Image (tube, rainbow, N blue to C red; front, side, top):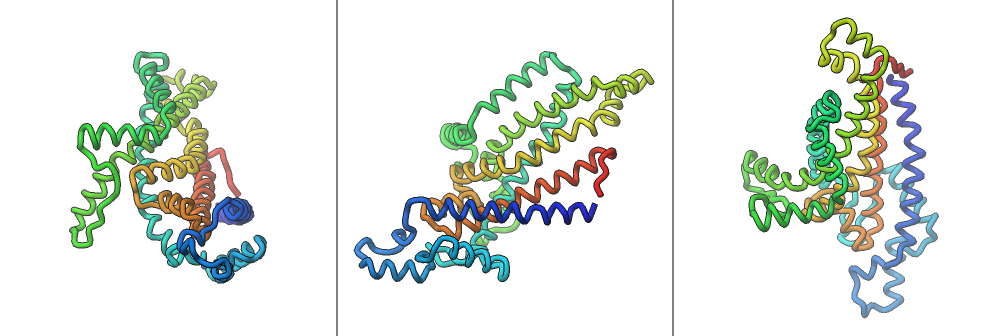
Length: 320
């Protein structure tokens, strides 16, 4: 297993390299001049060219990428923000905990709720519960995250002011429990928005997978031995049914991360998504590259973790 993990990590390096090349080219070829964000419109053309030279923006694209890649590989340096002059890595690391907190809670809630609902729906297919469950699942899938976010803000923050509409208060003089309470209160709406779409999709997969597995011959054999439906489900069927579910959950990481970018922007959540959007608006090339690089690492290693869980869920899989 250890050798397999090392091979997967080694195989992920070229993938991340290709992602950085494509992203670097797209970002740099996009229209807009980042120097216009922090210099006066009346600046002389020669002064503007001098500023570009100091920032390295006057060099050919492949040389700019080579310098960026060399600094990252050899020094772990992602450069400095073009707008505020702060180290990119420091700016991102300040935002990573907020994004991981938002994504992590939504991820866990989606799994915890989707599994039992999907299992019960598979045990009672085509029942009243299953039809109601299916209706709300498709309803959740049909609602774009940005629209749902705006609706919950309108309902639960404006019409019925229960939860704060945006932001997160981080008072320096606040006690630990007051900080936890405040963060939890601000998390409710964005976590709800992210969880709804995940839940609507994942429970359908676990239901369909379980119904398919329970039709196999070995399941009928287990039932003929007198085992209860619950024991057959949990001991014999669930492990095999979890493989497609693990795949869907792992492959949902990019979608959840993309959804977090939108949700963070709408709810003014101080995470990587909002930082990336700010970098896009300000044409902050170095900050945007760093944000995308860290996001790529999260996605790639999430898929490696999914491969490891395959072997845990199904003993027939042997990884060498």
